[in-house]
Length: 357
Image (cartoon, rainbow, N blue to C red; front, side):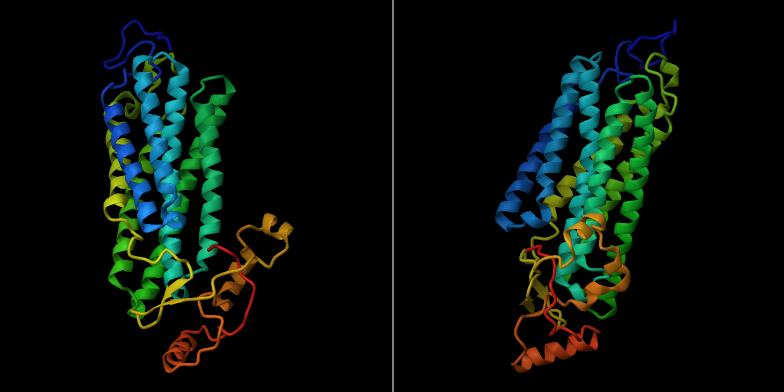
């Protein structure tokens, strides 16, 4: 990157793709801390056997480690476009993985109290999971093109990045809305034990931290539509100072990953997706689980979210959590009565379902 100005602005380093000369110590510190958190997540998954719920967390931390390692190398080679692109892409792609992990966590909570879920938990996981996968692809492609600084690719890359960031905010709002509704449904009937309450609080704080980072990145990208690497004056204030990055991206996401370590949201919840909380708020029972999606394969590809099932509330007619056999004891009879009072009265039907356990 070369400058056309005779007088260089304060903080500008000629030849650096970052505008400034990246700090050589901070990337090492953050890489080590994210590595510690990732190893801790890995240990927790092994101990709590919660791979289905929090298996994405070690992977997300690892992506951050790679991003900061590349940024450290780039600090010694600030004129290398390859290291600038690689580190930027890695650091842009990791936070959405944490958002997807939160979706898996809340999905487990919905399976734990399924008859109070605002929509079928599998549909929530499939819908948001697929959406996040699409966003990650857009995010990666947009970051690659926007940081390549190669003709028309830059403009299209910035457009993709803007679309990705806006969609990340929209998906987060939808996800929080579903979670709030689930909490409201549980509180309304007094079915909100401490382990569920505390787990949701951790998810809320995590979502707030991820949203803070997304807003920062949105300001960064929307504020730089005409950025020209050869012209230092075209850089917006948020890109001229490295402190913004370490305050609103690095530190925020580091707090998020250790938050999920220290207050592991699902360590007190059974990891067997067939186990659910009975209406008495104390007893835990094991249901039937799920078999396979009865829809034709072509329909599963065309409509992976099963929009028809969502609008017709078909999933509410499938009580996958209840046992295969009819209730015979007094306790089971009382439990069945409670279910019927809550509107889940067709629990004896043996419909085909989607396998997730």
